[in-house]
Amino acid sequence: MKRCNYCDFITYQGMTELIPDYLASLEREIQESLTQFPDLDVSTVYIGGGTPSMLEGKAISELMHVLQNCFSLDRCTEITIEVNPGTVTKNKLEKIIKSGINRLSLGVQSLDDESLVKLGRIHTRKQAITTIERAVKIGFTNISIDLLFGLPWQSVEQWKATLIDALALHTQHISIYNLTLEAGTPLAEAVAHHQYPQPDDDLSADMYELTQQLLSSSGYRQYEISNWSFGGKFESEHNKNYWRNNDYLGFGVGAHSYNMGVRHENAPSIPQYIEMINNSTRSNTWPLACINSIEMSKFEQMQDTMMLGLRMTGEGVSCDKFYRKYACDMAEVFGNEIDQLITAGICEWGEFEGDKCFRLTKRGVLVGNRAFRMFVG
Image (cartoon, rainbow, N blue to C red; front, side):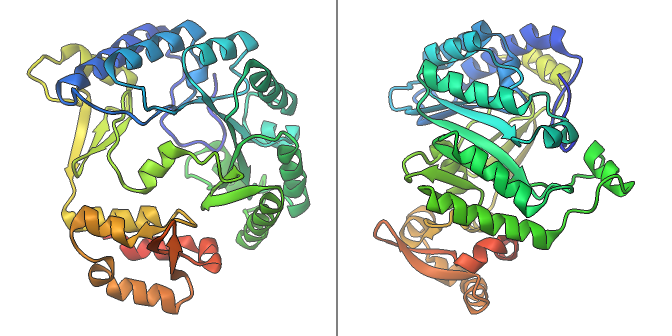
């Protein structure tokens, strides 16, 4: 495995020999969580972070077996695994679907071979298309693909060609992300040394607006700044839980959890994570590999609810749900911020499924960061 040229996420190379010990530690962390959450009703599962599809199909099946034994997954209608087209075979896809996983999130990023090489991806255009075709034949009916735009060398026409190719694959969900040059990554270094031009913000805005037009006219509904679902029927329920600032449990190295107003962060190093799990005792409180916990004040929780909720382009932040959650009125807590955003034409009052909500305007979607910053302490 290799790290992509644009990636600054927590990833690891040269640690294949630690996979068995890591999986054993991960299974123990999941099992030990039952001491604190004995009756947890799980609604979604997401297996991601790095490249879980590099695991053997047997290991993925065993992980799902542990989850099914520990939690009630009867109401769990969405179980996703992130897949790199360069690390999955027909046999592995068959084992994945047999394990109970029913949704694939494919890191395609581009359908242009030259761009894939520059990005440092390990798969080709053909591999990406073949993976999707195989998954459909095997029986997957909920497939999402990730694509990157705003690449330093990318023109609007090139991006349009990628979108047209992606639409021809008829996946149920498409996530579109604007490339961010992260300091210290090979791609950022290449731009700094003038091997590629600086990404153009105006050009990226043109690409984003083109994305909105093409996907909308092809039957996809935008429900979040970076996400579209076909016919509005395949929205990521797991991610919507994050954007609604609800509780969630994260397991594994570098995982984050949010429960009862407290955010937890697991050890970011595989050896450290394994050691902490191995050295934990029954007297340790979950999470066993936590290196940092932050208790959020009520006001900070409300700020996060506004900032995250505004990412959802139609739903926004529900006034009624906000009141039920915090026992106070959104407009009273954030009246000044709301007035400023409405005056600037970035946000508006609207209605979603019968509830009054506060959300981004069509123009506001293009400058969402201006709204988010209003709710950062």
